[in-house]
Image 1 (tube, helix red, strand yellow):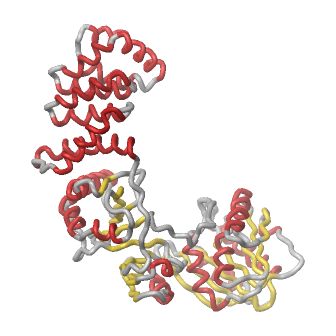
Image 2 (cartoon, rainbow, N blue to C red; image 1 turned 90 degrees about the horizontal axis):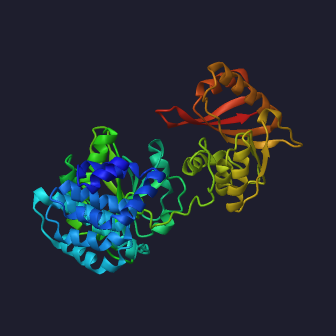
Length: 493
């Protein structure tokens, strides 16, 4: 660093030395030393903001911001005002954003409004967009962002319930507050009672489709234009009390590489910001609107909006989860499909209960008399107890291997999400399923039911051949690609 500082004092290799300093100050001891040097050489460093070389000006500005040099605010602001090279202008703003720029806030906000209203030549658009984003960060830091309140009561809307695609008809039949039809992504519903619709537990998510004919154009700029012309802003304003300035991110699910997807979404987001004149603002962290683009098998993108402003309270009990936890909507769907076999006031056990989701969803559908949850993983039991308390229910949770479990009375029902194979061998899983069926015989009453979610149907079918006391009542494939099945068995002891 000593050599770099000497060269700066001699005004040698300014561009490269300033750039190298930005890397060095990531280490605290270098940073401390440079801060001390700057205090003694303020005029020299500030002077680099007016150097003839544009990249030197840029690197000097960014370095001052990295150092949090508050005394540089006025120099940075004046340099920004005088800067004639577009690609450098945002660098001064990036530096000011790391300082307390409140005394310049009014002027910078006026500048932002002027840029948003300005027609920009295509060749300058990239750099002007960078300047707008940098200005907006300063404004947000000073004012915060507008948070929107949903206004959905009595609003006639079209939504899509994203759900298990093999069970779209099951979910469609559950809709009682509007007109519903099967959609490639789930169930499309037209309703003026969103609150009632959101009580359905068997869909995973809800999105608002945009009014676009067919799919989006493949070009990101043209795709952004199609979204804007669909009156996306009108849709958002209709669903919220506060109007305008919605922070959004783009979620694109398709076969592009990560780099291709990143380039595509960035170009689209920039164009949407530009077309909306700042009413739609791209933000990867603090956002309320997710522009979700879902590809079909041909790679064509279907656009919709997911709104975090509309709170979905179906699964608020699910505070805790582990990697193997079943999604609550999947658990609810399993219970819905098994409902004809479930009895009120039954004695129920889940031998692999995880965080309690299956038992909670079962009890919500058909109330039980007594519920037990067993799991070998202690953290899961602790999480399950908290989740169940939040659900306002009572379950007896026991940290134990199911094969070692003993109880004074028998159970009417087993409901469970069977453990996945993981690192177990085929032989180990075969043995595991054999032990499960043997233990089930010990704890079940005559005419008991087993509701099982598994992706090892082959092992189950083998045990059914070996254990004639069990008969298969229902077999439903829920995940064809991963072979997950809902199986309902009847036990005759």
